[in-house]
Image (cartoon, rainbow, N blue to C red; front, side, top):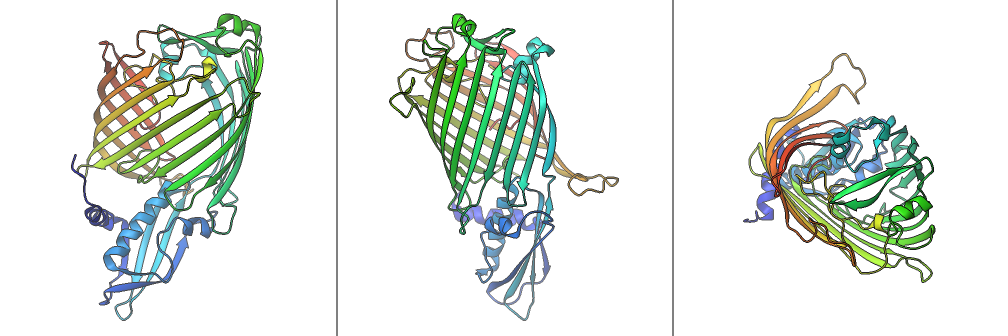
Length: 469
């Protein structure tokens, strides 16, 4: 595929962003403009410095007319990528008698405090649960979600869950700790116990077991520090301590479940995560690219029961072909060193977003895998804004939505763990293709309805609640 030169992309971006930038007044006869002021409006809670941190311009900068448009467009995308604002509008005010330009940024903030009811299924995804439709496998509780805590982009999450999967978890993150706003840190604690859990993989499917006693208990505690020197790239280092307890029943069902003969173990780990995010938005991107690299060292001390290293990487690119047509592609892979590891941490395809479409009901365990995905989409309903006049709150009365229809194709392959029993899908090329309909609305909500056919000739209808790529 022929790459578009960076200069051409900048010009195209400026042209596309012209309708989004309200240009009040007229440009002066000067070749360049000096930014005289930057005014922020609509941020009732968000601190000004949070907004200014994402801008690629500063007061006093001198730019050409075209370069100013490009930089304002990039700044707008940076602000929309934060989980803070529904809409961002930028206005440039100039006077014909001067070379100065006044920038006004108009923000529409989201609602930041939520208390969600929690109804979670024990299965890997909604489709595997729907196949059985067992309501008794639901866990229930409350999820307190505070985004933009104190108006400083801080995050505070508290989850309490009861039922067969019981859990209390806490996450707190402060993104900016130093004066230059490049260092952040956070803490996470998770305490859980389970009466029902997947205990083994048979015929490429997870088997679950339910018991009156708790089959597994675990406590996870971690500290992380994040370095974000610029706008698009971040580096996160996490030190975590995981303590596991397994029942005799669980070990009897699968002696390899814990990877050791003991019923109790502590697993220290050190993780490095790099992210580069150049997408126009996070929930459902239509242009730009994203890449990440995760390196985990499990068992960082000599006394640990486990000692192995896992590397995982992914990349995604989104390219608008026309105003309505969009092409997206993604690649992901994992490699893991040999070493003793518990069964429940040896996951490959079929978990999270790492799956070949058409194989939603199957899992393939292994130390290593690669995965390719491709989408061709058409905006059946381009972004529309619905105004609910009877709702006064600005966080809810303006509802964006869009709908996309498209075709896709995926492929992937897994290599099994050492000394593992080979299943029919391991070391085999998996492939799937199909048709899909995506619905996107505000607060990053995505619903995908897809009809897929896999290489084995099996077809099915599947629902998902995040972007495929």
